[in-house]
Image (cartoon, rainbow, N blue to C red):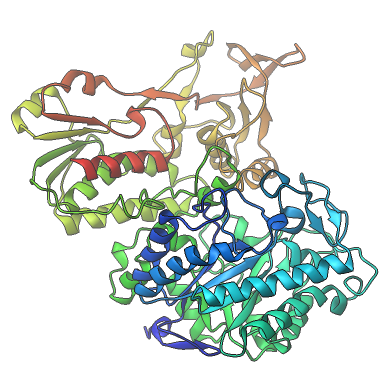
Length: 639
């Protein structure tokens, strides 16, 4: 295949080494005041050295009242220029061009960060948000000025261009969309008036930085699931107006609760909003940047079909900063795959989390301290357990030059990844399991499947270090009569190891229970999920959870919360509801997804029998893929 992605390209006067763009993604790696940190520099430098042509640094606020995130980068004052200069220097050293996205949160800004009431075109709050103050015409002029001042700071800091954030429900987009703009003056009403703020900002920035410095904007190709939201036809007109106002490119995204970029699909679909970029491109002369879960393969196709000029890959670069270089050198099996879990996005909503994380890349945000160097002394390492923790420990240890043997009691590598990949909308898990298998072949890790680890077997092998990643044991709830019923474990259901009747009760309403319910519902089973607690699937990532629960309801799954388990009879499960009503839920099969406990039996037996014994993954505590891989990476790095 011709690699159009690797052709040089120009955006106005800015020359790029290839057509791959890292889009802006908020990281929260700045400090509380908005200054660039060493963590920020290392993060962006890794992606620059990884081969991307253009890096658009994340949404950076131009005005303190517009701050929308904790630890958000700032460009609202000259005092930030020095730190931003160090950031551009780090990116340029890696061979990439550096631009920065200028941002104002509008009504999505938060007073807890900004210290003031949010502002907006109208006094309409976003869902669950604060009521904003309506901007006066004079205040709008002040915001235009602050965008222009910020663009000059970007130029002084050594950036090669700036992107104006006009998408995703932030201030400029709030003016563009009829759903959030109810003004009746020159900034509201028809489309030209609603686009006036964007055009004034582009013109002011263009005037301030001169013609030798490219300026472009990010726009929604469409708003999904928003009454009176921006349509594609409107976006095409806005893009043309932006071009005429001096935009050197149009970066086409999408927004709204039903946006395809926020949804999973039963079978992974790359480039979910490429059609929006294609339609925008038909109406403008400037380059168009396409984004939205685009794989390199899909990017090649989009370029070949003339649907866009540049390809932005975001989460793929979080999972693997070296994706571009690996793709360019045909090392496709070496690319750590993004599993489209949206956990990185959800981290932005969690107050206790300091900076975004990745389920599959433990080094995200730790690029400096988590560099992989050869071990001072090569050791013979035994990894017990082929789940994500054990596989990652084996991979990292082998990369460092250790002799690694992995024992897995089952006939396949993967551990809980095998079951996790089976339910609907989870097909992106399987490439991760395959990635580990491919890496083991390349690195020479000796895999022994069907191998049951015992203390005696360890005594015979004499490893210098042991990683115990033995996983979990499923728990069985104490319910009267349960032992007499047709009871099966959720994992066995997913793997097809057991037969299931037509009327099924799933005990346990967390991720595994609800995913198993959806799996069975798609097979035509009548499924009820029960839970003692008040809500279902609380551990499902926040962005995906509403869609997931909606799918369950649409497929006829009954969800019962706040119940007490009384007993199991020949008719089914007897429960008492929160209203103290006794109910019999008919069932010919009861599926258990009632939690698990760490399996540390082997660890307790072997600790002290080897010089180094480590616990990794769910046998420490049942957690997520991210935690298991983080354990494995840390241990593999430390041996």
